[in-house]
Image (cartoon, rainbow, N blue to C red; front, side, top):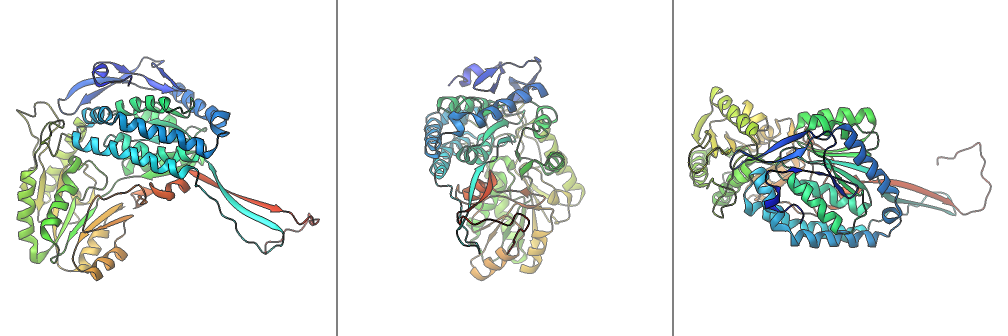
Length: 503
């Protein structure tokens, strides 16, 4: 790969437009810090509107180019299969880039990127199986059918926590359908997306099908989402930013898929397998340092087992190994940015002020072996209330409140008492209760006796302030295509030009 881990250090990364790596026309760059050390690692191009225009124009041209629009779906699938093979070949390099970029432990980035091989293979297999419908109508000798067509240019804007994974949940179906793409990664984690562009080129995709611009959200990001040449924006990030994007694309009548914040309830009933539930709850909030939109940061525990569960949660939290993300024994690395570290510290202060009782963590980790990295201890608060600020707002850090409840009706009401509706988890041996909870919890995904379990075939997306649109499975094919209705009258009869029959 062009951007191996050694050559990236200390360099300004280019952007990728129309199959070429380009330096910034303006010369402006932004620093990217390595979370494990707090030191600058590389710089990115801070793209101007002119460079965004160039990328969108390249994507528009590629959309109409014969080498993309006139090939068969099976030929398109072949390119995606080749891309999957290249991802598998270079998974360790891409994983190391992401670990250095966002601080997520190497074992997790390796697992995530290795999974992408199967993810792209899944959508490659779907590319020539995207079928429309033949719909009977109440007119003789009329053929009425539908077909899925490419939307056009799709802008994919990704956050810092899982750059390639989140890029791929939109990119893979986009390629399968035949769209073209302009991607903008987070300004904090651009290296793996730039490196990924080389794999796209090596897989044989025509120039302009995939383009990467970099820079701040207020600059390059805003230019991209408001661009008249973009047909759809796929954004993953915070709800406040999502609202601004929704307003902006609304003015342009551009479509959007928005996967936004979450405040997932994690419910433990008294009859649950407690060891499994505690393990799931700890992993659900401390994996990835809590920097995941589905983090189970509201842990509801039935009163009769509250103290016992609290003690087990505390013991497990204290056993979490926090350290350098490249070390095999590490279970939780640093937070991704210095700003995120400050936000987590502020939420901890807020929880204390509102009366929650700190039972472990609550502090930045400094000194050997943490140095100037952005490390924060796994943090639990007891006697939390659902109306406390840290139980209502997304923290995006390793902090959870443990909230007691007395009845199924009470916990369902509290679980739903949030502006978010992305995911939820519950633990019980009672199947009837589990299904009642599934019926009543207002979330796009509900996990029973598991947590953070996802599959390429299963649609993922939120309700309420968690956004709209779906990833994974055929649901994403529908979201990244447009449905055309075709009506063919082969009766040979003359139509009354002044009468339209709607029956």
